[in-house]
Amino acid sequence: MFVGKPPMSHGRHGPRDRAGETKGVLPKSEDYDKTRALGPNQGPGAATAAAVDADALKPGTLAGAYVLKKELASGGGGTVYEAHHRILGRRAAVKVLRRQLASSPQMVARFVQEARAVNMIKHPSIVDIFEFDDLPDGRPFYVMELLEGIDLRSVLNERGRFPPGEVLEILEPVCSALQAAHDLGIVHRDLKASNIFIAKIAGQRVIKLLDFGIAKLLHPDAGEGGLTVVGTRLGTSYTMAPEQIRGDGVDARTDIYALGVVLYHLVTGQYPFRAETMTDIERQHLEAPPPRPSQAAPVPPALDAVVLRCMEKTSERRYQTVKAFIEALRDVVGAKSVEPEVTARGAAIFVEIRIGDGADAESDEVLDDTSAILDATEHSLRGAGMTLPLQTGSAIIGARVLSADARKAAGERDQVVALAKGLVDELGARASAHADVHVNIVVHVGQAVVKDSADAPGGKEVVGGELLSTTDWAPQQSVDGVHLTDAARR
Image 1 (cartoon, rainbow, N blue to C red):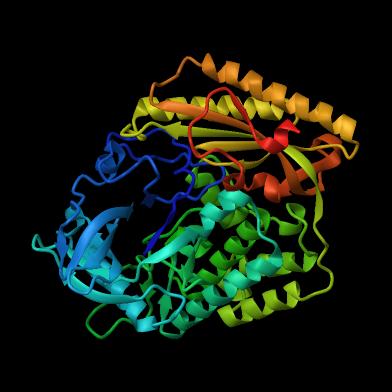
Image 2: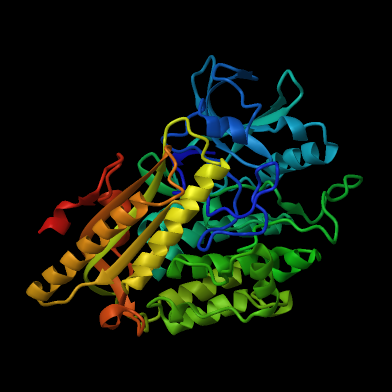
């Protein structure tokens, strides 16, 4: 597993049932992923951690020969801890099955299957698992290599889309790992940006494919049987192939569909199908023609053909192997028809929601206030003619391209600052205000990657570049009023 920067948010929340789980309504620009990575103000003792994992293990707990140090992430099936070997001192990650699932033979079998699938593949771009055992209370756990870095969805949230050449560099090792899995009759079934990890090992960037928790063994050993049958739906709505949604049988071509979605996501910064509910997203996967990435980002039109073939509704019309897909992508990225990126100066307003230390980030009151802030911010920014290249469940960026004329650009920057100050007043007067919710509003001016857009001021829309890399200029601490970066003051 990993130690790294968590995603910026967990998505917007819709109506919740009594257990506090989101039902039906989805974030506009994020996948419905229940894995919770711990943020800077959500440590192991925080109320949010307790709400998500009531049986979290305390630091110092022994898992075989490993001492647990802190919780790293928690999902629907298990919790991952940083740990070290009590004798050798070797650092590792330990994944423990949830207590309420340990009584289910099927869930235990699936947990075992994840470890077994990873060990069967034995690929350098898949996390290595080197020990499996049970806790004294009977819960199974396994020990795996500890990675330091960041998942791809978090990078997308922070910096925007990737150029095609970098996408190829990322997907080469992912496809190598997938092909190795497919050769052994293993289908991942949950390929998405948050399951692709950029790690630093010995100073080198290494790509790892994570989470084989719902992997499908197409050829289980005699007498074992499969853990899923036709009619069972497993996966993430934003990336699920039509046959997954229908509950039909899956094979390697199911992962190839997801590769098309991931490719579109990486080069455009958004999903091909977006809607307010999971049902609507799944209906688009079943019925709607996938959009062309060249309509959303400056990428070669030849890339459209690769995405569209991956996302064919019937698996027979897709690439039949991962090898065929990556070869097609190499041909496109190496083509001379790739258009150079157009850059310009731009101005951005970054609105970030921060939850206080120890606060329950999943309480109805906090969620209602978060939604009110995001809705009001989106309305104000769009109303002022700004485009929104980034929207997550806890942050929005509004951006515009500045004029080439320095005097005119200074006036446009002043307009953006005035808009930000108006947001401070508007959000400060909101009826839903909660004591544990703070809003940072930051204005920055910087270099941006732009594309033509009839709906944007001046006919240009910001789609990437330094202007959207908030980690480079947004304050890490909470600030009051409007914070102007040094570049925005000039």
